[in-house]
Length: 199
Image (cartoon, rainbow, N blue to C red; front, side, top):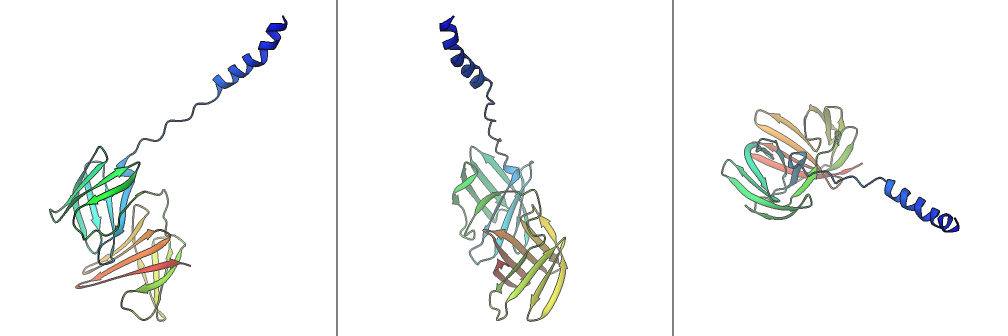
């Protein structure tokens, strides 16, 4: 009987450890829940968005449709046979890039669940300008204030990571990168870009 009483705590501990919840399996990596963001060699921001059927879209100072494959951590892309290359990934991060030098920086990021711009304000400069610019986002609009001149525009949200305003001959793109707002604007034939800090 004494031996049974001595073994009782060990038996209870064994039962408790066996009932402990097992750690959940890590979430399977889904490339379509990611986007690739970065800057082109001239400073202009870009975003690559992906669909499940192998279609990809590159948005920068224009919008270009293309295709991609993702096999064994290698993400190959082709945009109209003009921008062709590949990224090697590991654990959901880009380890290396092979392709045209127009792509200067790159980062694979998970698409956030909510709009990253709504309610935020940024201040900085477009390249080649003297006056600073403040950009305020609210809902599906943003206002841009430069030298006491204010303009308001509706925007299209891209993967909750980028904002695009497109008109006949111009496109404006803002992308959130490292808590900064990277902006690019093409008003044909002039491209401008800038970095704006969160206020």
